[in-house]
Amino acid sequence: MLPKFEQFIRERQYLRNVSPATVAWHTHNLKWLRFRISDRRRTHPKPTPHYTLEQVENIISALVNHVDCQLMIALSFFAGLRPSEIAGLRWEDLDTAVVNIRRACVRGVVGIPKTPESLATLPLLPQVTIPLTLWRQKCGNPRDGWLFANERGKPQNLKDVVSRTIRPTLGRPQ
Image (tube, rainbow, N blue to C red; front, top):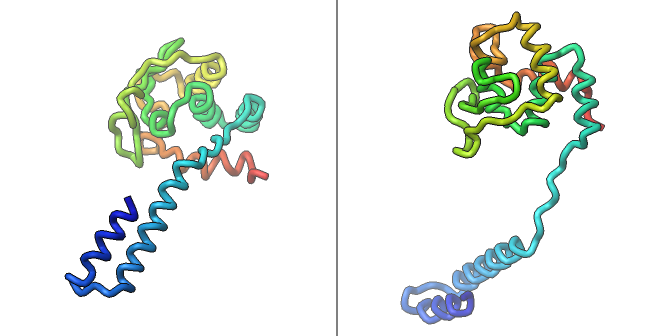
């Protein structure tokens, strides 16, 4: 493709009063762009970093004084929920054995989850039901409302929870 384009430009440069330097500059940029595109195709994606089961259990154990944070971490790791889906959970979405993903909350705006496939009913593992039971008891066994509400009764901003509670409790990663 590039030689044909280069020939096309060279044939018409005198018709349009385009300098040879301009043609050379555009040709160089096209060669660089072609190299970058073909180079991207050849590279293999880097493996996604992830926590081991032992590391997740250590994180949850370190948050022993923060049951809400334990539940957030458990929902994220063991149920695979996104932060927006966790923030959008209400008590009505939880059953004894399942969680219904019906909404997401991004920057305080409640809406639908990121993808249509995210609207789902997921089973709850024991690693999630234990902190869920403790959090329900600590909240006074509510039947409705946000699972993680802020002082104004709105969905909690999980970035605030991470920066104010989780990171200081866990310390800096090494």
